[in-house]
Length: 336
Ligand SMILES: Cc1cc2nc3c(=O)[nH]c(=O)nc-3n(C[C@H](O)[C@H](O)[C@H](O)COP(=O)(O)OP(=O)(O)OC[C@H]3O[C@@H](n4cnc5c(N)ncnc54)[C@H](O)[C@@H]3O)c2cc1C
Image (cartoon, rainbow, N blue to C red; front, side, top):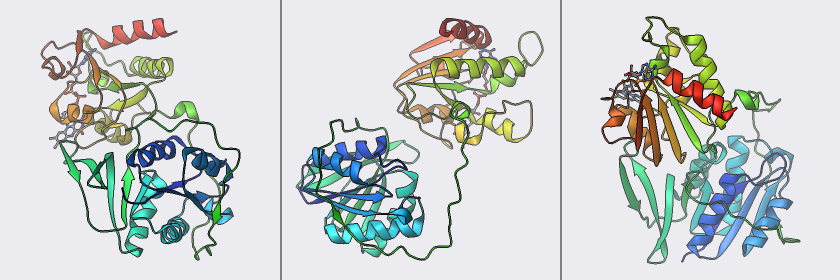
């Protein structure tokens, strides 16, 4: 197997996040000589993890300038580490930070980059990269002869590396003068944790469809109750919230809406393809452009008033032909 460089960035507290530990698992599975490259404000704790995992060399670009995600500094750090490592294969987790900076670094090194890799295997001493195309409808296995070959690994495909950090690590620090930048990070604005409805690490994906905002059998719309029920289920099950296109579009049009539902929640052909193990669809018809986004959700249940909905046509394991208001009300009672 060719030599591999794993590029990871540390978090604000110096730790390695789950995507980095997953990428470490993938890098180790390739079996080549492994160099780990670290970028961040503090890198010592991460270096001890790399040492425990068996990295042959640990290279680092660290310091205040490299704490914040910023294209100019991240690309410069990645470029310097990749040059120093001289590895043929450069792996990195597909975090927002690396997805932005590494294509530029690959270009500077005269290499190539592939994104959204979901699997790696060794074929004739080189990696064979699995990725999906055409909105997750076709799976392909790619190899390349160009080097260095950068590969961004999608999150959630392998088990994160686990182990106790080594007592110490031999760190090779690379001095990189931070490039001039017009970007100054003055602070972070983030929603409160319990306002965050997209939770990639949740076990359950709770999908709400347009039915929640439609007239119900009593002839009236029950938006307030729909909100309470959906938020209650999310809170009780610590689930992630997905939406159908019809529902998120109506939110954008200012109709009777669920205020916490945005286009970021949309699952499907023109939305996202989440990787939760379980999915529960409520008030959603289960049309193909929506269900194609469920490709990686292996255990599926749906609640729909319509026994002929799309879910009932082989797209879900269990379909409850029932009123989702009643089902989720009872579900929340049990969760409480
Ligand atoms: C090119 C293209 C791309 C698309 N991409 C996407 C995509 O990425 N994602 C996506 O979602 N869609 C996508 N669509 C749209 C998709 O085809 C559907 O129109 C959409 O998914 C329908 O949303 P829905 O099921 O929430 O709404 P509806 O079709 O309005 O279904 C509402 C459902 O709620 C049920 N219901 C109502 N009240 C209750 C109740 N009390 N209890 C239980 N069930 C109830 C009804 O029986 C009905 O089945 C795309 C379409 C096209 C043409």
